[in-house]
Image (cartoon, rainbow, N blue to C red):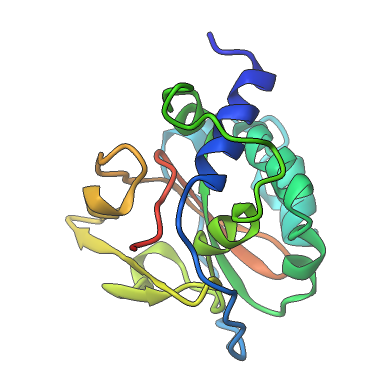
Length: 193
């Protein structure tokens, strides 16, 4: 098992090594959702997802055991307060296991890389949507696009949209926070060059 500290370093290093532009902050449009969490990991959360519905997104991520590495990286990037202030978001949140499989030698950069916040912003959409309403090309908070495919109720990002070149499926959807829908994914996403 990879330690949390080593996993965090790998995630930050991976995120800092990716391309990304300046954040594009279009007006967010709130969408009313009443969807339930789905996927195997939902059953493993001790407190249950109902407890997150009144928390801002960064607090909900901080309290989610499957997102401990993302929580620390979010704090390091300084992006948390900006996301908490946004009225409606969708966050494609890489679970800890997605970080633990990243090769350390490939992503060996420093913890304060200037591209950390833009890469994290690539995982955030300025619209609140459940997994089943994600469109094939979604604009991200980073000003680029993430390609989303859906088939047989499974939401995926094509292999070339991930750091490892593997196809991530949504692991758990519609974790509702006060201002965001958080979709847990099993790969770290990469902005397109």
